Image (cartoon, rainbow, N blue to C red):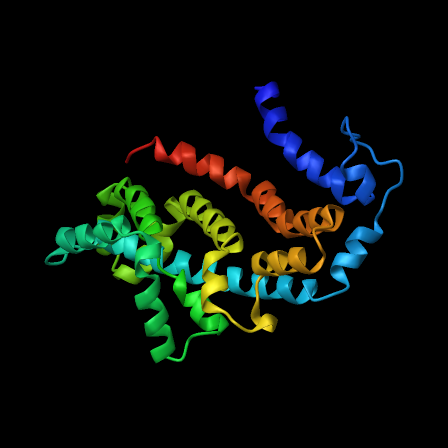
Length: 259
């Protein structure tokens, strides 16, 4: 396990090392893991341009998308698992069927719809683009199904409505699973390159992924600066992972327990 972990960790360590080197040291062979001279000014140079703006755009879009997507997926999952209504299973199967459609196949209709609704080249449009997730709904539904119906029945006897049951009974029982999906949604949205590239045109609206691509073309492929920008870009992902790894493990453990 140590060797496997080291194999996955080595690219990250090389990126960190390269971000603090001069350009000559980056291409030194054999690899020199510890720089002779620590070039902290690489980060200062990266952050001196439009990088902070791209960073803020990504934070704003990612947090809003994650919040809306988790809320919608959680409510939909609860409805498909614990609320009886006509055609529930058929509607759920139709929702699952949309998961088989490649995202690239609907780009043109989405683009035309966004132009018609005046959502093109706006952060609102980008947020709405990923605010509903079939995968998130399906994943959370499986956890809600694991909640024993006796909990729901007891709450109804006490006079609780569906929203109260959802908020005070169901959600606390599957909170690790919801937290796991929130972490995944954050990572997917933060790393999204295709959406901002197609649905945003203004430079001041660009997210970090598009910003790094533009910075790469403008910096003339100076790899020490590119690595500094990349390390800055993945920092929120590392923070989210280390903070939320407990919930991910709890979510995995919860998946093996059925009510």
